[in-house]
Image 1 (cartoon, rainbow, N blue to C red):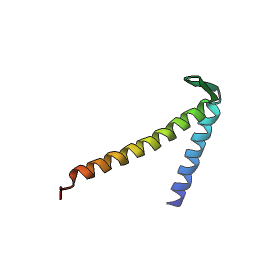
Image 2: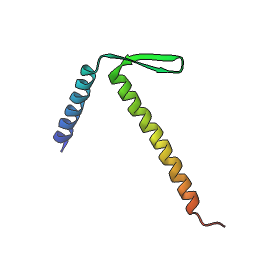
Image 3: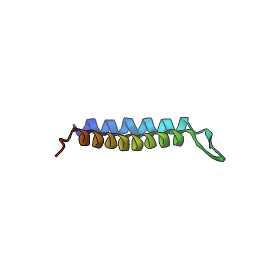
Image 4: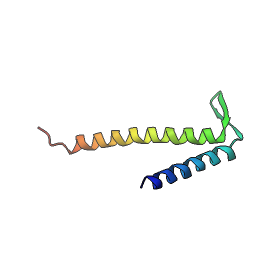
Length: 74
């Protein structure tokens, strides 16, 4: 089983490195009067991480509201 994990780690690492190498072009992102220029791969990874964080916070908030709504009034 550890060989399967080793192969998976190698495949995932290779895929991430290929993604990084192929998306090296610079992209400019603008919001209001601010702008940021960075490689496309960093932008995609940043948006993904931001989505994971906001999604988990929203999920926790909704789950808390649902638990509070399901409680019986005392």
